[in-house]
Image 1 (cartoon, rainbow, N blue to C red):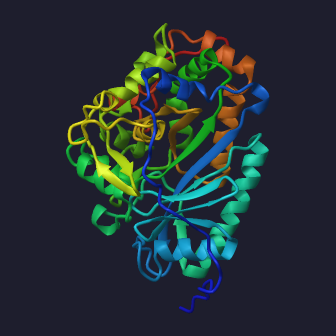
Image 2: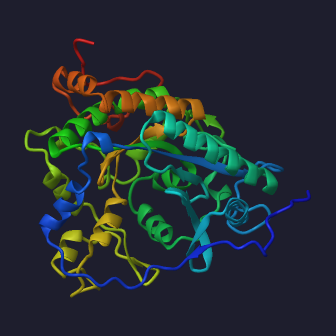
Image 3: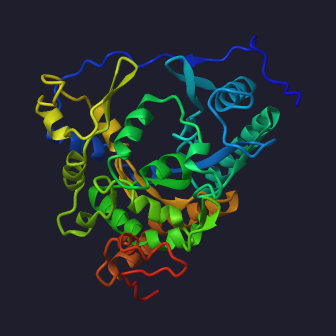
Length: 398
């Protein structure tokens, strides 16, 4: 196959590794303030779409290695050069691309993730993703690469998939082997679709968080796209939803405290502080802190790093290692859905924005809930991903 790729003479921007961080010692209140910094008045609310997909060799159907012809590095290099994206490097390897607020990143098994820029509405999100996918597919076609949209790859075995050269993933891989039996499958063989939404106050955050958690079984059912694994029918419409229950109990699953009367930014900080760490990032390197306590880090007592204190960036990195179905940063991330077609991802975007960004719809869903409970509970019980979805909450008056 003849592949006409971008010439090496075409300039490609390259970002440098993050330098050593110097910072004042942060406090517990700084962690709360970091989350509260996401508060925005309604006219400034945005929508952000994220989508992962499997990349494969069109000639063989095989998973792509990082190096090789075709390979993931080849795809990133060619896409960057053809469409003028900036490369983000790690140890001399391009591992992400950025342009105009959009990013392309790699999941552990070479899944290619699109993270759209924060845009004003669903229409803008659709237009941006459409334009991006056209460019990505064009570059992929040049390289002999195709994409598959599934929540789990239906046929590839673990040994068929190649690890990407990211230090973060090496640490996670080793730690996952000590936790749930499906942690490696989550890393290497799963793809999801995600929506990020804003809030106007702490009370608004709490209300959206509760409704979003309670509705996770609904969106899992609507977006279910992972019935097979290892070439066999699993008996689940979304086996990916079950995989997450067998990944790491410290950082996945229910967040029952969200439904408590005193739920607040501080409540989420307390939860996050009790989730074991994965890593520190210093001088462009990931340092293994897997299983250690961020509370000890705050006190300067992190084993092996005594006398070192975290920065806000360390805190923000730590927040990315929590994997509940709804995750709080300076916005809410709604994470339960399987990867699916463009049309389904756009429908999911309209579903969430229509409920959480419409005051009447949000109030009805929240106030008429008959004792809203965390909607993920049925999946923990092992029933939710099956062909028949069961929910433990009732919404009245709709």
